[in-house]
Length: 203
Image (cartoon, rainbow, N blue to C red; front, top):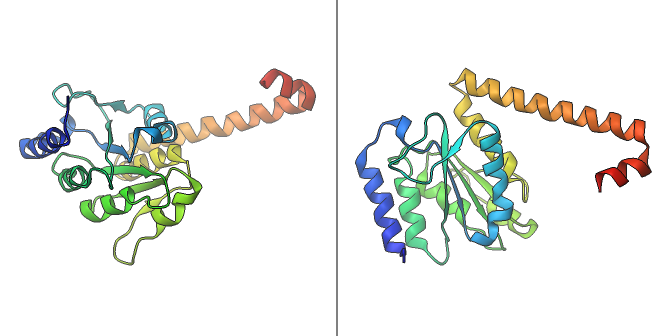
């Protein structure tokens, strides 16, 4: 059985390995509980839509952009949160996406503070989490998306990386154009089929 101490040791040992950038994940996706996964899966979808690969074995790094996913609870496993955030830069991460639910959604905030100046994109998993996630004091910035919008968090993470990568910027533009075209197609279908038929076919 994997323990918190095992994961702390893993993060610290990976930080000490000083791997080349192409062998480390570019984006970290963390959440406070596996119950947040259905919401946080949007970040996975956005990143994979952009051609990122999920890392599941540090010793088998994929080529190109990649990301990792972990459950890191600010309240139940604070030592794990500290280890993850404090080693993030040395483990090669360029951006972290952090999601948490409840009224005390502290994981994004604490990660942003501990990993500073690494960019952190906060995702309030529930509406009641918004105030907690965005309530950072001056001098401790956090980028945040609306409640449940982890897909946007994935896009935001890619935007940070695309500032010095024209090819990734083109992928973002292409994905944006695809979504724009999708709206046009739906609009045309609604008009030509009519409301009742469109709703029946959609359901």
